[in-house]
Length: 248
Image (cartoon, rainbow, N blue to C red; front, top):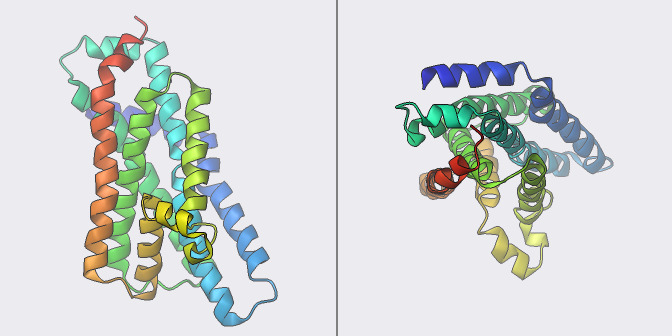
């Protein structure tokens, strides 16, 4: 499994497209939208916008790691790698972990860099760094867990890209990453509370200002870890069908 983790990390670090999706594009969007929405407003309103956009766009763009996860799994399936690994003593559980863990490293690094960018460029407050670290780890676990399930369920790269966009952009819209949820209709506010993006965004904002209570942290942690665990279980259950489609 360790060899698989190292190989997957090496492949992704050589992928310049991944650098674009994880860092360059989020930074461009963050700078652009902060410039647009803070133009002509006072200092207080400007800080509120920045406090919403930096964690909001961080949460939205971590979902795009699912594209890379889907492509990696489909490539392994089509070149016969999955079939060869299935003939070894390595269990499906360890195979999925070996593919999953490298993306956790990547996403966690992405979150840390984007938050550091917000601190250095916009001087966002990071009043509860321990809470922020916990939330970053759980956000990573949640996103990559869902991505793992998606990677073994979809049949083609195009399907993976389409569903990733639905999860990333649709979740951002309904989860309050683009606009405050209290500005939405009641029905959308109800839907928003069912999405992990909403809980992650609210918790990140509170932790940045030092207002995140332990009970809220525990609640958000359970929600994010629950989605991630559900993704891993779904991937395990779907793996036999994924293996039947493998070449070799």
